[in-house]
Each structure stands twice: as C-alpha cells, then as structure tokens.
Image 1 (tube, rainbow, N blue to C red):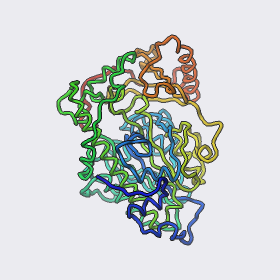
Image 2 (cartoon, one colour; image 1 turned 120 degrees about the vertical axis):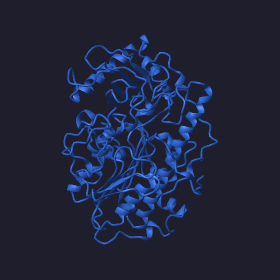
Image 3 (cartoon, rainbow, N blue to C red; image 1 turned 90 degrees about the horizontal axis):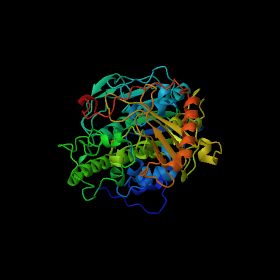
Image 4 (cartoon, helix red, strand yellow; image 1 turned 90 degrees about the vertical axis):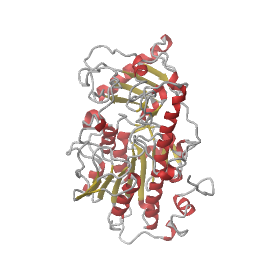
Length: 509
C-alpha cells in the first residue's frame, strides 16, 4: 500500500514533489526560465482518463483511493465540481473534447467511427500557431486503426482498447513494438521520452490518453490487494427501481447490469444472490487499483516538469472522458444520463488560472477546446458548441449556462440502453427515450429534483404536482435541440430495438 507523508493542509506542487522525494528541495524556485522561452505561450499537458468517476479521486471525496498528485493539481489550480460529458461513451466524448462539438456535429456516434480528418481540433490549432504537438496512449476513434492522425507531430497509439499488460504500440507510424509492462507505466514512459526531446524555446502540447480505469480492470501487482479489507455493497439506488422505466429492470441481468458478468469479474451469471455482491466488490477494488497507477503517472510527469524548469509555464489539465455507473440504478458501464454516468472529474492549473478554486457552474466536455485555446492565446475554432471557461474561473461569468442537453443513440452492438435525449439544469434533470421512428416514446421518462434527490431515487415524471416542471423542461429541451440544429424531423437516431440479453462480441468488449 502506498504511503505518503505530507505535511501541511495546503500543498503547492513544489511542496508535494519535495515531500515524496521526487525532486530536490531547491525545486522550481531555484530554476529560472530558460533563455529564449516565449513565456506568453504556455505549454499544455493534457491527461485524459477513460471511464473515471470523480469519486475515485481524493480531491472529489474518495474515502479510500488516495491520489496525492492529482489532489495537488486541484489545490494548485481549479477543480470543477460540476463537469459533465454530453455523450457518455468513450469515442463520442473524446471527439467532443478535441473539437468543442456535440456528437451529432462531429459525427463520432459510437466507438468504431473515425474522427473526420478534416475536422479542426484544439491540438491541431495550436500546431498551426507554432506548437509542437503529440498524442500518446489510447486514441480510440477508429477501432482498428493505429496510424498517426492529422494535427500531431508525434503519435503513439494502438488498436482498440489496448491491454493493461503488454500492449502492442504503433510508434508514429515508424515501427510497431510490444514493450513488456503495465499500460499506464509504458504510456508515461513514451510521454516522458517525447518531452525530454523538446526544445526549450518552442511551446508544446502533449495529450496523454490512459486506458485506466476502463474495463477490464487489472491493477498492477503492487496495487492488486490494497483494498481487500474495504467492503463495497451495492448502492442503495440499485434497489430503488419503483416508478422508474422498465428498461432499467430489464438491464439488471445483462452485460451492463449488476447481476450480469461484471466485465468477467463474475464467472457464473446472472447471479442475484446477496452473497454475489462479493464479485461486485472485487470489480470495484480492481477499478480503484488502476487509478493508483494513474496518480503515480501524474507524479512522474510533474516531477519531470519541475526538474526541467517548465512547471510554472505549463497548463496541466486532468480529466475523464465520461463517468461510470458502479451499481447505481442496478447498472454498470455508462451511456445513460444518470449522474454517475455523466459526471466527470476535471482539474486544471497553470498560467492564466487561479489557485485553490472550486468552480460550481456546469461545464462540459465541449468547453475544453475553446478554453485551452483561449488560455494559450490562440485563435478560436469557428462555430463550436462549447464555451471558454477562462473568464468563468477567473472572475465569474454572469452569462454562463444554467442548462444543457444530453444525447445518446441506441447501439446494436450494445443493446442495453435506449436512445436518450435529456436536459440538466442547475436543479432539475429530465430525460426521455425516443423510439427513433418519430412515434411516441415507449419508455417512461425520468424527472429528478437534484437539489432534494441527488441520488435520483425518486422519479417524479408521473407525479401530477411535478407536471408544470416537466412541461417547462420539455419546452426548454426542445429549444436547446432546435438551437443545435436538432429540431423537429432533424434529430436522426436509430430504431430502439429493445433491451437484449446476449453478450457483445468478444472483439469489441
């Protein structure tokens, strides 16, 4: 088990790195800015995790997962308390993060579609402005393509999901190799190798895409048993299904339900026996273990930036691509619009950002691209759907959004979630499930008062007293969709073929 001896209640990045012995005590203060550096053009280190729940990090309140390096990033900059994805699925969300567009605009609706090569994204725009750019790790837009993508000077990735151990990598289209070792460590090695070759007088932007903590969850050996003594029951909402749509109950015994195979942590399924919660507990323990390695990776990167004198002039962003259901509403995986599925961690620190601030207004994945370009002083991408939060975090923004819409399209490869359209305001959430052919919905909608029911235990959709709120939210959702070009007859989606019990193809799990 990791042991960190940290002194003081608030630690700067320098203080933390000294405390764990990563850098000498002279640290950042003793190293001046190298000659010739264009200090008005910060570097960007962008770290993206896969399926990371905010509550798996110490800075978001985890009682068990200790993440001192990530926590210190949050204390040294901005932590967004209410960050969300606009589609809770890996590839669509990653495309939104890069482009500032919703899935219906960038076209990446599933985990098998390529990001259109001609579509502008924030690393490519920085490259146009003189930055050296690199992508290392899980790209996951185009399942079987590991070749370099446009907009990057250096590109190291793999096909599909990659493996926690011994992944085969395509190194910038030059060679394929299979370094032995743990994915998180190997990806960090590649990233550090690229950073060490950078010129001190040229700004850079590095995107590091971790596999962790995506299923199937396999921690490295040193973290395999850290949480063995921690009991993990099914959450209360797993059994609070009365008044909720029937498709949620139908999902219980599928690939995405708590009585199903749990990403192969349960060998005999479906299993709804009380004692079978042990399989669920083992799954969560493994998930947490992979997060510990991500925190180690962040520590290694920060140590290098400090040792090389670049930490003070580097914007560091750490986030997840989408949330994850761990038993809530009887579900695992994501895709739905329930809170654990759409909430993501997002912390940022560096030039142009305040220190030690928690921002509560709702920010979205589509806000990342305009925000980073704004912080770097680069020209904005045109016609994006996100907004820069630079003003919001520094001085507040009276015009910031108070509502946004969510979209997800039914997948034949993963037939466990209907089409979803919904709206989330600062207080309420309304979601409904279109059939896909223009006929009336066949599933009960869901309405939650998040101020009084943050766990979404009580669906108010059938409550007569909530009818005025539901009507207002329906109208507001329709207006948001129309403004996004998804008005009547324009929001194309597949036909909902219903919840099915067969397992997905082995190749795409």
